[in-house]
Amino acid sequence: MISLKEFDTVIPTDQCSRSLFTAQRDKLAKLMRNSVSEAVPASGESPEQVKRDELLRERHIEQRLQRLIVRAKGIVSEEMLVRHQREIPVDEIPDYAVTHLLAQLGERELQLARY
Image (cartoon, rainbow, N blue to C red; front, side, top):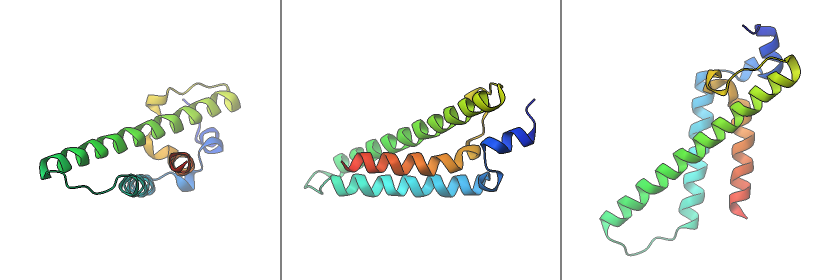
C-alpha cells in the first residue's frame, strides 16, 4: 500500500475533500450548461422536443464531466508511476482526489469548446 507521504506529493491534501470536489464538479457543469445554452438559440420547437434536447444536453454534459474525471485520474496514476514507481489503477483513485486537476482540465476544455 502506498504511504500518505508519497500520495501527498502527487495530490495536494488541502484540495482533497468530497465537498470541494462536488463544488468544483457542479461549477464545471454549470459553466458547460451556460456555454451550451449560449451556442444553441431558442427556437419555436414543441415542448416535447425542447425537453428531449435538454435531456440530451444533460447527458452530454455528464459524459464530458466523466471523461474529465477519468483523464484526471489517469494523470494522477501516471504521476505516481513516474515519481514513485508504483502503479495505482485509475479505478482505485477516489473522485475527490482529482479536484485540483478537474478545475484545470475543465477550464481548458471550455476554452477549446469556445473556439
